[in-house]
Image 1 (tube, rainbow, N blue to C red):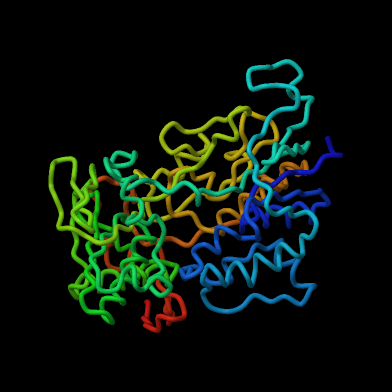
Image 2 (image 1 turned 45 degrees about the vertical axis):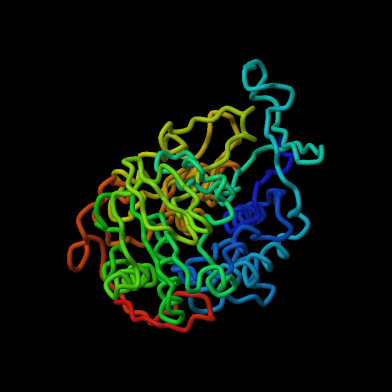
Length: 441
């Protein structure tokens, strides 16, 4: 099957890294991107500043491809737009004609075989179906399509709350742009649901807005019974900006800018004039709010993989071999054992799930993880099984001792943390328009 390309679905950070590794090994990639630009999903959260520095956001093979063109990585911590324009755009240009934009994949199958047929399956290539009727024959498919298009609903049972769809004009599922959409949030009552880093980012941005615009009120809704370790590892986090983000959110709560409501699992959304009333499964009703920001995670879309054979964990919807390593109910200290082709391959030969999609519904994915995944997967496709099995990654630890998915929270990180030695950094954690700075230890 060497005559056929390796199809990579998604021209985001991990998909383009896969292309760089394929080119480096003399293989032919074909990157199919549904959007009109490389990093289209990243650009949609253009205003959010990453807590990983540039040094951890550039894949090694991508760097080797870019540097001969004169490209150099900037310093500091980019926003989503800066990551997309200063890195992903140039990387897509370097990959060249191997990237096809506005090409949405709608199906993958084994040529001439549906998922039921065994006979001759291992002798046939894969077929990738593109919206509009195109079909591409592939030796392998690396699915780096991510989960950005599948935000979890506000409803506490994983399904939309009663009335949630009808109130869609007042509910956002991404970190709000409080600069670009100032009138939507300034001087208004806003509820933020979620306990991850996206929720903390939203809380910090809205608290800063409340400082500048009196009347802005923020309510933080937690499904867990206590705040617990939701603020992260603080001083013990080996990513200083991630620790500083939690510290700023904690400070906003302590200063009274954010009201915390714990143990609240939304069951219904009701209209109250121009406002919304959130109702829990036990009938608890909150004060009316003008806007709701639901930051409750994302989930993968496997619908277009329905004709290939997948082995997915029934809980996380991640590859079965990977799921125990990333389970948020048990995962502690932010440490994920290095993993690659062995954990990511599927029963369908030549099919791999990588990047955010490989984590299914689990949170805390880092770009570094995706880069290591595609290094290993590409080595496996190239037949270099020793390189595929050799781990080449140590992840920065969070300093949180306890799974992030524990239902009622967990103990706060102990002083000094459980994971590593703190570092000092002077950081700007929001988009350039917001000038507040903080010092993280």
